[in-house]
Length: 193
Image 1 (cartoon, one colour):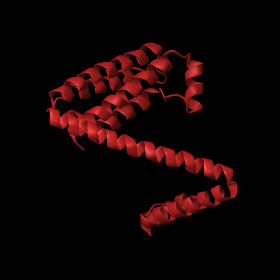
Image 2 (image 1 turned 90 degrees about the vertical axis):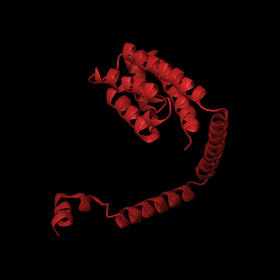
Image 3 (image 1 turned 135 degrees about the vertical axis):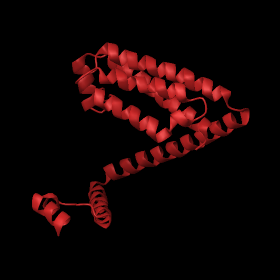
Image 4 (image 1 turned 90 degrees about the horizontal axis):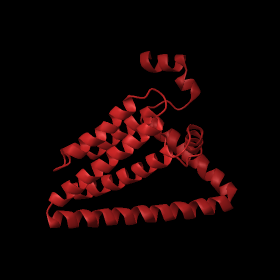
């Protein structure tokens, strides 16, 4: 991908995460847990945040993009904040992380502004095309879900097909697919013949 597109996409993601952290900070611990369990909320555990930061920085290679090293360092600070907590993140820690994301977005804005006008334009066009493709996929998924909800028999058949296909692909890759294959005897046989 082009650096401009990566910068724009990461900035959007950071804005989403900042809003989610601020929303989570506004909830009580019980409300935050209930929201995460019901999938309405962001998992706000320290390990989740550290993993999220690692994935973001690794997958985007943000630190290697022109002018983005400061933003990558600021985002890494979220991991340090999360590391101070053993089990649950306090409201103050959630807000500190949100502030880190705001700072990183400002740093990304500076990096984006330092790119040439052509690079900026190409990045915007690519992000627009990616967003259109994601919107189309989301629309298809919603329509497919509605169609399958109206026909439970077909939904069950499709689920069985997906499971069979998944097992076949895992076997092709040499992965274990059943409890028997994952038993200590199955593992011993797989390792030692």
